[in-house]
Length: 388
Image (cartoon, rainbow, N blue to C red; front, side, top):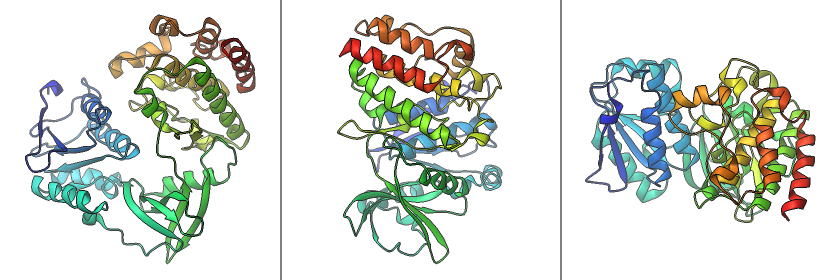
């Protein structure tokens, strides 16, 4: 199948819905990530409502499933929606077996899917999938923003008036609840704060600090000033060092997973235990931000991995792009084997001292990087004094 021939159109009924037509096609692993990349491009163009026509698609291989799942996750993180229609019984069974049917919304026809989009537009809540949970005392939902292991709302805490992210976990959201429980154990100014966790009539919920923007949003307007890049890199390093002391690791570090509010305050979330993280591997969703260890089957939950991740995000802040760009199959080989372009080759305004710190983080061999996050923070502080 040639993914470059995916037909694309705008719905005649809803002008803000883009329909990707893959009918009669199957995903071939020699074109990895092509569908996901198109979804990502649409999201970056702020086309956040995407409908995929899967009529007469007989099955999905692992790459096709990954394309859709990653597209759904990224869309949810950016307050967008990906829906499917025309899904055959075989694929529906696959979604059931993988428990994805609970979070990825499927419809029999285009009309039904568009009707769900239409109700979302008129009410702010997706009535086609109204929650079966009772009201959560003390919180007033304002709008539903995602359905990914939990019904996730922007809500207002009645007692404080504070806007929060309210999650009511679904039966398929065990991993989401576990990560939020881990997050609740962490107490650091650069880690997202869990306000409350509880249960109402057998329905578990969590209320988490709400931050509307991300570092990726900020980078759409170009690289950051050197001083801001240093400040944010130091904040990330400090949060990761603290979390590691609590036996937690962040293996999904990239600009779209780093929260940043209007005042420039940075917050991390999406931690997991170090033991679970040791089995992490590179992901097409993270593309140029995966570590060499993850892509070569080694332990990705090490201090050296943390140092590399800080360096990769710092590189993006200094240049406006990841250390490695291109097709996923090219990136998979480039990250473990080739050095990135120097930050100054992309942005000549990057100070030499800061470029050196960044590139040391991105060394291929773990032993050639900084030996600790504290050592990295010290060099960042020195670089900050030079660029201040």
